[in-house]
Length: 62
Image (cartoon, rainbow, N blue to C red; front, side, top):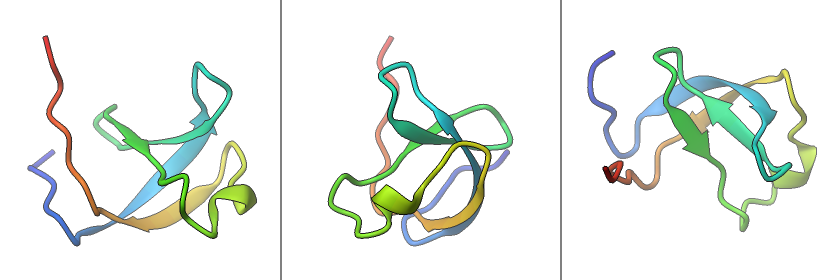
């Protein structure tokens, strides 16, 4: 998968994270986290396909 850019719109599959929160997974296996400030966060459930806009990109640390 190519690099992700700020502002890009992606379709993700939601699932429950290790801490019990809802996360998204990209087709290449990378994880996407949802903002806790989002008014839509409470509507997210596992196994949904959601359309999201990239607002922050963090680099993995080794």
